[in-house]
Image 1 (cartoon, rainbow, N blue to C red):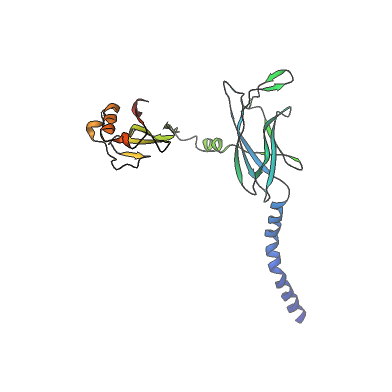
Image 2: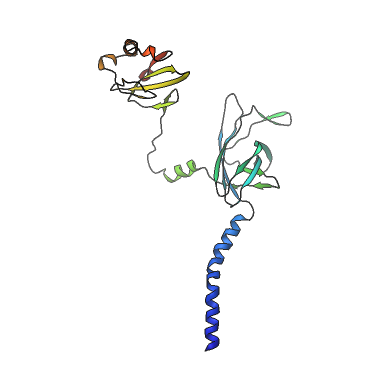
Length: 242
């Protein structure tokens, strides 16, 4: 009986270690080797070469890596440089990043122009040039393709975005007031009710209905309110006619 009690006590001492072992093994495994998932977004241009516009990388290991270049291999036959980095690009542990590649004029295969075709059934592999080796990325589908595949049973609404001087606006926007102040170009938006918003810090912020009929009346209101004395020049645009 004493031997049995002793054995049980010894077993209980090692139980915490047995419980922690799978976690420790998993954490150690996450630090070993290199494993990266890559997906691409390609585009076609009229005045630049068709190519890979974006590369999305996900580091599946708990160790950072320095990337010196990315290469693509098309149909296990033709390789070409996607982008290179000086200094090297750092992909952090267990993190993702999007790389916008640099455009180029054309690809040459010997003396001939080479135009890669990225559409199926063609197959593309991506390789990362690291300091100590070159690794092949695991293919990953772009999230937008996955989302569309999962949601294809629904009617799809497409985003429409209107911008003026970098400001997004919708049908509730009537006019844009662009002015220069303190050597900076600023833009205010006047909505259909006459309220002035966005880049606007003046005391009056409401346009009377009588001056909302067209941009010329709005400009007249601004001139009559001595707006010129506070800015270095301004213009008014009718956003509904752009």
